[in-house]
Length: 232
Image 1 (cartoon, one colour):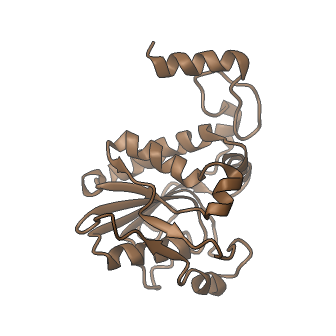
Image 2: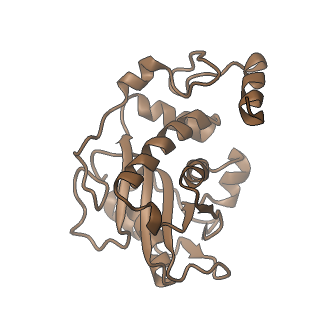
């Protein structure tokens, strides 16, 4: 038993491992309980390979080259993502990172990725929450794919407004000027994978992708735990 596995086993003695969706105690080496796993919405081939949405948005100007999602943002997935955001439900991120890694591998894109990063969180929110759930997802995918994880390629202005209550058109406007690229990191001719928890309208990922392409990134791919059925 390696040290990481032993540590996880030891921690479980004092802090039993729990399902991030229903909070039921599960085996120390499990990520999700079988009952919750059976309730996860299955995407199959219902979303667009390019934009990552059921309601295709490819008629909009997209700057990312391909977008992946593992499930739909509905039902028990909503609770899992809330726990990932607020209660350090890293099991949830690890479970879906494995699915996303296999989706990216099946699309034969691993060799086109040089750097894995995440949609950033404002400093004020990061200070309050203690971690960025999108980064946790990105770290695991980077490790699985043996790629470099870089957390500070993209940054967000601290005065940026929240988007979850905005309409489609409002989100497109809200992202303008919201994000910045770190000019000290060379992404020229690099393939970048951006990770986030949910894709709704695609506005955030598209704006981040636009900035990366502006700095001469060759490819930009996106990976999300969940996609909403609609774009609003």
